[in-house]
Each structure stands twice: as C-alpha cells, then as structure tokens.
Length: 222
Image (cartoon, rainbow, N blue to C red; front, side, top):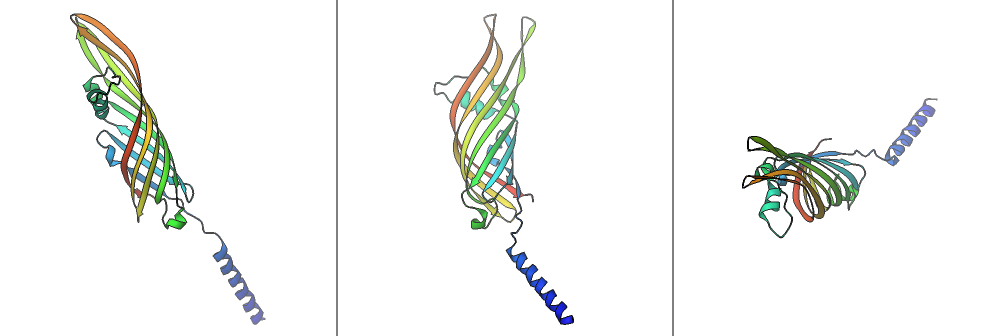
C-alpha cells in the first residue's frame, strides 16, 4: 500500500512539474515615466509609456507651457515671407498653456528577441494638441483703457523613429522625426497712431512642416 501511494505521489509530482514547464509564463507589462529635457527652455514635457504587448506600447504625454518665447523667435525674428500674428513680445514671453499628446509605439524587434522590455528601435506616429493663452495688456488712450488679448491653438502630427535603451530601471530614448503642424492665432490688438485708435480683431492660420530631434530620460515605475 505504501509503495502504491509513493508511486502515485511521484506520478503526480512529475505531472505537475511537466505542466509547470509547458505552461506559458505570465508576462508583466511595464510602465515607464519619462521627461524630455530638450524642451525645458519653454515647457515641461512628461510622458507615460505603457507596454501592451511584446512589440507595442502606448505613450501619453502632457506639457506645461510657461513661455512661448521660441514661437516669438520663429514668428518675429525669422522672416521668410510668412504671415505674422499681431501679438506683442511681452505676450509671447508671458504666454502660458497646456499640451497633450498620444503616440502608438511599434518596436521593430520583440522583447523576447531583444532581451529587454520596451527596448530597441521603434516607429511611433504621434498626434498632439497645445493651447497657449497670452496675457492681457492694458493700454490707456484718452482716459479710456483698451485691452489687448490673444491665444494660440496648435494641432499636429509627428512620425518618429527612435531607439530606446534600458539599464535596470533607467530609460534613455533618443529620437528623430518629421511632422506637420497647424497654428491658429486669435488676437484683439489696439493700435494708437497720431491720436487715432484702430482695432485689429484677427485670426491667423499657419501650416508648416516640422523637424523633431530630442531625447527622453526616465525610470521604470513597475
């Protein structure tokens, strides 16, 4: 009887061991938090990348814009015959806003082959939206106060190619790409010339190609 029970126990142990070897392992899907230091001159970009499969991840980003000075340089200082919005230097410098972006990232080599999660060369189409609010500027003319105001909306598409490196919990993500973006300015600006008051209640649309070069750095959260 004891021999029979021992044989049954051994048979069950071997069966369980064989099943454990053949059963697919549960794959963990990692989450990464990254920033883009290349844009710190005018905004703080924060990204959250979530793995969805061995070769695919979703990247969400949010931007806090604390100055629009780079757009002032492009709109006012670089002249190649483009239209220019009637927005003052002070408004550009003091502009504040938010931005949102979504990217679908396809890694060209699966992590089983690369040996790392969310690592290797990837292709990523990105859509984004930004909204910038320019501060109001008060001007007094003949004892009456007139207020200049304005805002800007930006919608764009980017096609990025990059190569993400992982080392333990650290992430390094250089990328390059091309895109197209549309900037829509709205403004009400008062002008005072020779004791004459005029109002420029305008809207300007600018559609231009763009080049993206940058590097993101971050950490694996879990």
